[in-house]
Image (cartoon, rainbow, N blue to C red; front, side, top):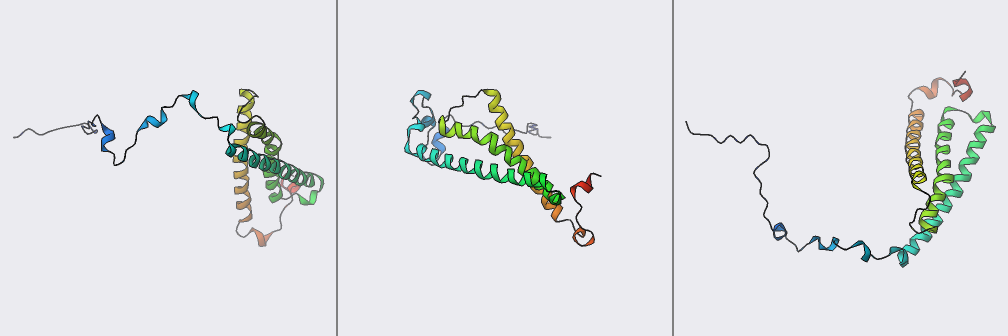
Length: 172
């Protein structure tokens, strides 16, 4: 019986050539990425950064005004008028609270980072982590609130059988 080649390794015997750049169909080298950090161009002094700073500043100011005032008015209306308290509006209030917190807490710090201090964070590591955490939590809260609103509005058969219960009836 002839000896069989019993290679039990799952990894093939692969020895890449030493000059692997010669196998590529185009001339490419990684030397472009070997620039020392000292020689990088300061992007904060370019016209593009100045234009981006203006656009970001206007966008953040608009978000702070519209989300701050609009969500506050909605939350205040729900707190004031008990007729508005149904399940859908409470889910929308959850979304509004999340967006309101981002508008009054996260956006001013982002405005400071991008527009005022030009990509320089001066508020410490704890506040940086807290702002990023709040922004991430708000994203998940908003996504889940929108999902709950969609599920609540798509309940089959419930629209014809009984009227909506108010939030005060839910917790009695």
